[in-house]
Length: 528
Image (cartoon, rainbow, N blue to C red):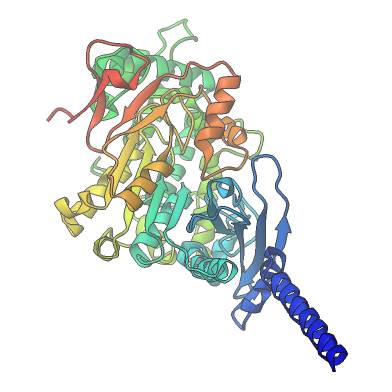
């Protein structure tokens, strides 16, 4: 009897031990990661997750890939240890078509997610001919991926995401605003960089016009250098400091530039411009005008002409494109209007044609900026833009912001939205100004501590062009500040700082103190 009882106890102990071991294995990160395929259903295909070992600055994590609706590729990554409950969604930029950064914030306790927007291949606008791909690119892919990413993360950790953030620049910034306007409950905090508020209208129209101007009277890189020197002569001191930066380009008008004075006199061919080149430059600064001469699409503010945007968009050459970005962007219009009988890019009316573009690409065109639902959801939004951004012109964002204040209420907008215009910055990053800013900490403090960003300190990490900056950040689209500062330090750059001020304020030198220190500048209102 005692032997039988002992045997029973031993067997029971072994069974309990086996069950505990099985339970432990089932609850292991490996098992939980692999088991995420169970979220697969008729509308989404979720791969078994893969455990990825720690490497360099990237924490060990579970990586999950899959597709939504058979067309939208996505990726979700989750740190094995140290998750803070946060999600960072990387809204893809450019023409998308690739999976972007999902690792740069893992070591800071964020889960991350992104999508290819529903089509394959960067720099190929032909997806605009596919209505499903166009809708995915416009708004559907980010929303559906965000919803599914939250389910995947909750399944892996056993608790819901809280809070959720989104960051994107250029088309990514456009997608950020689209999320706030169309799906205001998806994210608690949104960072919209260079948000391309007129992506399928003004951006395309100005690109086509600038390409035409360049074909008629081409600017060279030497001509662009003449333009930058002239801008500094005319406008450098408007902010009270001769530092090569235009603190408030709104004061640097085309009239102040006196472009006609740059025309080459007879017998001279250097450090001056031809009459045709002056015409091209004036058009780039002014924008697209209608038959009466009224500006219908704003141009780029003077300053930082050698920051890289003129080379990328106007003059070339650029190693990674067959043509300039303006010419590539003009091809986007041809794909959007491919069903228009007899369409010809050569005869396209850049003023009247904007209505056709908005209608044909309604899924990509931003709705009116009424943020009342986003405000009601408790969301917070930071938008930033280089004053000298060529494709995503600062004036377009200014107009968008003023319309948001009109539709949502001027005082109400201040409760959930801040816009920061960055002197000396071109498209998304790069240029001679202090533009490396930690927008991530600013949005986290606003969402989680209710500390609204009244100014953000930015640092100049070096005179990177846009593309040089992209190389330096090595794909870390949502965590580029640290990478770019490191790259600048290795290059021996002078790391001066400036405050970024909430629009419409700008940073003005206080007249004393270290000119390289943000503490010597005050945020002030522009002159009337």
